[in-house]
Amino acid sequence: MTVSGAEMSQLSVLLPLTGLFFLISSTSGSESSVPYPVTCVTRGADLVEDGVEVLCPPDCTQRRVPVFGTGIYASVSSVCGAAVHRGVLGRSGGPVRVHKLQGRHNYMSSYAHDIQSQALARWTASFSLTKPINVPLELTSETSTTSLPTAALPAKKLLKKPSVKKALTGGNKDCPMDIAMVIDSSNNIGQRRFNLQKNFVTKLAAMLRVGSTGPHIGLIQASDSPRTEFLLTNYTQPKELLFAIKELTHLGGDTNTGKAMMHAVETFFTQETGGRRGHPRVMMVLIDGWPSDDLERAAMLARESGINVFLVSVAKPAPEELAMVPDKDFMKKAVCKDNGFFSYSMPSWFSTTKHVKPLAQKLCSLDSLLCSKTCYNSVNIGFLIDGSSSLGEGNFQLVLDFLVGITRSFDVSDVGARVGAVQFTYDQRLEFGMFDHSNKEDSINALRRIPYMNGGTATGAAISYTTQNLFRRTGPGRNFLIVVTDGQSYDDVRLPAMAAQRQGITMYSVGVAWAPMDDVKAMSSEPKESHAFYTRKFTGLAELIPLLVRGVCRDFTENN
Image 1 (cartoon, helix red, strand yellow):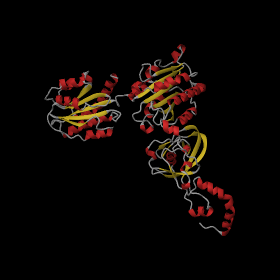
Image 2 (tube, one colour):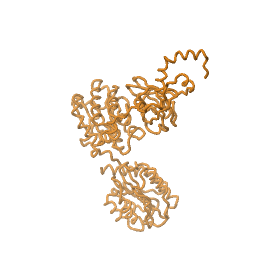
Image 3 (cartoon, helix red, strand yellow):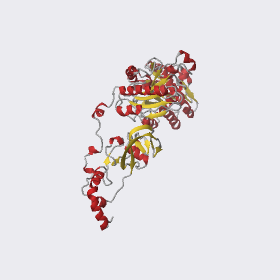
Image 4 (tube, helix red, strand yellow):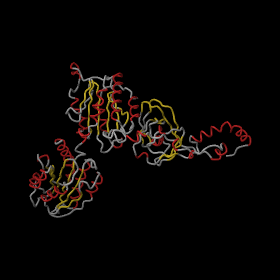
């Protein structure tokens, strides 16, 4: 860049007046400043200076980061997540400039660049983002000799200091729940009682004490259609959570609580939306009066998914109103278990403070959450695999495919279901134990790698071996053994099977081809007709997968 003599003369006159401007612009993130490194979860609210240039790390799209708004973002949004959503930053990260703005209403949700931003009714501060502009160095060097480089500034001026209290507490460690709150936003509750409901939920959330190691809370409003207000990981500090609850707006419409519950079950507790693996899942449903739709189907899916549903009924239908209630037993059908623990009643929305503590204690009662354990995450499944010469290599692979299909149906993990396998001929071989693989994919790969033994058939000895070795050490769940064989055993199967069942192992037997049905039934638990299966061809095994899985779940549910 070249500057004429006249321009230089004018510039020398302006310098004394503009020196302050150059100092401020440089110290608050000038175009030549060094970007300040941040993390994927750094929020706009964490930045003190306006116009600061930050350096985002790569792969922020690989984790769940909160983003609220489109173009203009609420200050509780992740800066780097919003930058990717806006398109000013790619997956590889890089520098971005943050401009602070005033708070506003109606932050709009949208999907862009693999980031789904969320809607927010109102927030106290906002920010926008631009790409940094590289201005030639000679301009800044000639126009200001007193400017200070941003790199020389103390780092504490760019980021707010974290609260010592937050860092120390981390929330209520005795209540490590993921809690979905479904609140009533129908015409029936009306604006006044809706505000009283918000006050109650605010007090309850304060009592629960959210935090990184404590409970996480998300919220859905039930109306004509469910509306997710915030997910489990959006607010993990009490102040932000309570403000978000207070900002909720009444929707109106029907009390379609069943639809809202189904929405929560299907979308709320996944790891992609912030659900934590191994943490108990709780859904608290608030209903003013009675629901407009059916709750039973959603409640059944919740139980199967390991979600403990609590129903809080406010202002129960009066005797003269019962005729208008579509399902008078909606409370019994909605809860995890109809034993009185999962139901809670309040006469009205007035004077609800006395109900906050007892309800919070219920939601945090780990030992009483009966629905946390499901057939999918609380079983130990042993496979006893016939490796005799009558199968052949090709059919043996079909058996392994069958066992892989069963394994895929369960939540195999270090805190969930366990899988182990034994192969037998006249001899037995422990292929892998219950604790050898701590996730589903590793277990499936281990099954696929099992080499074919090729030999005779001694099923009775194999059952005894499996009972003593595979089930010697298991997880806390219920034990199941699935035997797959294609022929007559050379030894007795009845006594070993009875011994296994006396040790608490539920046995399923699957006969293929030449397997005699007398042996298949003799090995299986009672009732025989629901624990013994047969297929003439090995290609028919795949059709038995859903029957076996349903059987395991039925046995688990009936015994729990």
